[in-house]
Length: 349
Image 1 (cartoon, rainbow, N blue to C red):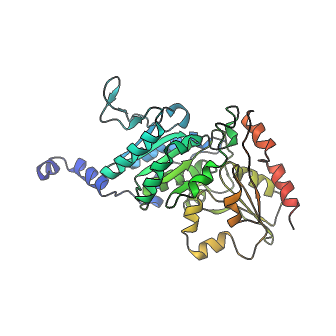
Image 2 (cartoon, rainbow, N blue to C red):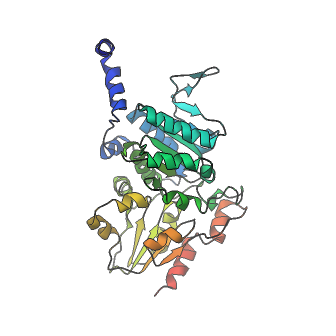
Image 3 (cartoon, one colour):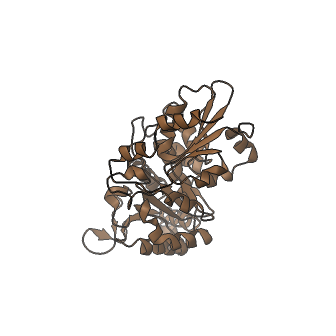
């Protein structure tokens, strides 16, 4: 090895960094990723843009899919395909797991145990229970080199109907100890989610991404959204009068919270893409985001409501299965709109 290292110093440095799990700090990595833009965009599409930058910043990062690359959008451009035959080689960074979610999860764990590569695997969120045992093992074994890219994250999936519309699934992941579950609300939060997934040292990360377009919170600078998301929760809209209401939301519901709060000067909107990360912040930071003096709080997520009662006294959630219709119609009919949120706020004391 010494002779090879002397003849190939750059490759040796890259190999040793991979073995030692040495990556640039999260704050530095976020600075080298360009701003994402201001137009509405699905976070799975944002994720496709971000994963290209992650692959450049982390040379030992590889990714694969359980036969859904075209939908989950985690293909690394110019990364080549892993395997033998056809257009594949063993230098490829894109893995084709086939329709074998459990096998995918087990292979990701094996890659992590081997100790060189960081690896992610993708499928629709609703299929995550097929490989839940492997996620539990990754969390228990502190396999920080593993991450999961889980798209089509809610009833917003639409026409595929309730069999493909997750409602309990995100919260089912949140209860696994040592698993960070990131559900970003826009492109800049998606940057933070991906960066966190490759810089975290303690365990794996699940990235929960939307099928449908989401509005960008352009009123908050990109770097502030990234830095805030990297802390799990942050103020997405600060009150302009005495604080009398806090609206907490995540993912596709942050846009509704912002719209509902637009004409409420005493309302603060908190985006909480990752509960687990927020809980690891200092008491002072958590108090600055969710001050204990303000007990009038409402949370909103297109999923089961139970986990949010830790932070809010009222929750606008989806405690039933969805139905087959265009995603925007399903969302509106099941209460995921700014109008319904405003109506629910009006009933609070």
